[in-house]
Image (tube, rainbow, N blue to C red):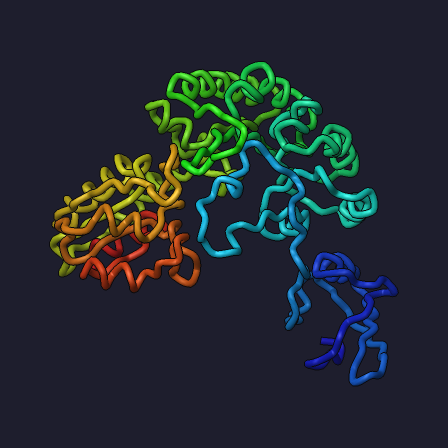
Length: 413
């Protein structure tokens, strides 16, 4: 592209000095581009056209966003602060980087961002961002973030909205802090910013068994979950009538904890908060019909599956339904999370040794299915056990399943 060669270092585009990949994307938007590059100690000017204003196809050898910016908060509910000792170092890193929010959908609080950097966010029209609001009561928010100098969130959200930018929000609910009337206050403020505020996810606090010396917090009980769901569903009806979207969503964990049926898939609209655990179950179930359509029995006659306590009834029901069509017997097992302990019951936080402890000596059939969310891309669990180590210890092939299609495919062989 434009004569750029391997080894070139891009200094500026159209006279604008580049800080990171966000700048590169932003400054490549115009049709006419002037690159200033460093090649072998010489500075050269290259010109190009970007008629479709799309990706120029350049690949970079250095980290595109540079060093991660770490979080200076000490949130009373921070999951990183609740990790057991002895896990890999990367798990203890708390990032607070709006660029990762923009590119990867990571949630940020914006509580420590400098004025200069926030002006850059506005100038680059970084949108959509994913913002951990938690509460719009500024004093309460600083208390929950453990940061008495944390920046006020209301003015920043208003400025983002005023500049035509958009964001998704989340509120991690700590009983006695930001629930009840405080949650409604947060909902009302964010709804008033629609469409800049695109959605609000309401998520229960996750508490591990490693909270020594931390702020005492109460878990969300089934009764609390039912009360929150009632409020959220009332607000959804209000929003549908006034702005044409449900806007606010309770995470799947609320419904599972409350023992209530989950909403139908269409009620999650475009699954805008699915990475926050909002609509995962509905999407899984909605995929089932398509996954089973045309599925044919294979050579497999007996499989086992293992997942977190919360997900087991749903996944087991889906697997048994598939088993009836495919002629496969299903053995299903709940796996307690001893890695984190406490009230952690979601499948994505299970360690390899949790699976091993739960399944040793069990009838596992010809293959074992586990949730793919429990593994990193390199097939390593959070406790650093590898998938191959688990297979060797259990003496059975282990297949990670990411969705209903994976589940049916693995069962069909």
